Image (cartoon, rainbow, N blue to C red):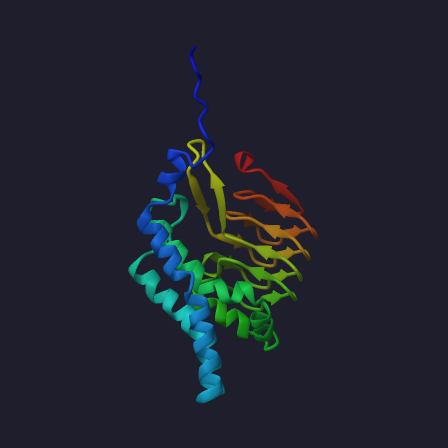
Length: 228
C-alpha cells in the first residue's frame, strides 16, 4: 500500500534564503541601539547635564547617519534581504527608531519655527524655505525626503519612503525611493504618501488621500505611473 507524504508546513527555501545568518545577526544586534542611546541620554541628564543629554538625543543619530551615508550610500530601488544595501538601510532605520517610536520628540522641535526643518536637513533631507509641518506629521525615512519652498503639510500626514513586499519567489524585498513634494504644494490632513511619490508644484493632495508608491499627484488628482 502506497503512502503519500504530505509536506509539513514550515519555512520555504526562499524564506530561508531571504534572511542570511549574517543579516539576522546584524539585525538582532542593532535592534538594541535605540534603547541604548535613550538609556545613556537619561543617565547623562540625571548625573551630568540636561542640555548635553538633549543635544546627544537629537544630534547624535542624524550626524552618525550622515557619516554612515558618506561611507555607504543609502540604496534605492528594489532591495532583497540578502543584498548588502539592506544592511545599510536597516542601520539607517534603527538610527531613526527612537523618533518613530516617540513622535512627541519631533513635536517639541516643531514648536520652534524653522528648527524642525533644520533638523531634517541634518538627516540628509532637502527641505525648502517656509515649510509648514502640521501636528502629528509622521516622516518615516527622513534622509529620503525632498520638499520644495512654501509647502504646507497638514496634520497627521504619514510619509514613508520604503515599502516591504514579498516577491514572486517568496523572498522579502524592500522598495526604497525618495518622496518629492514640489513648491507651494499642499498635502491635506491625514494623507498617506508612499515611496517614490512625486507631488508636483502647486498640487493639492486632498485630506485623507492615499497616494500609492511611485504615483504622481498633479493638480488635485492622482496620476498612475504608466500615464505620466
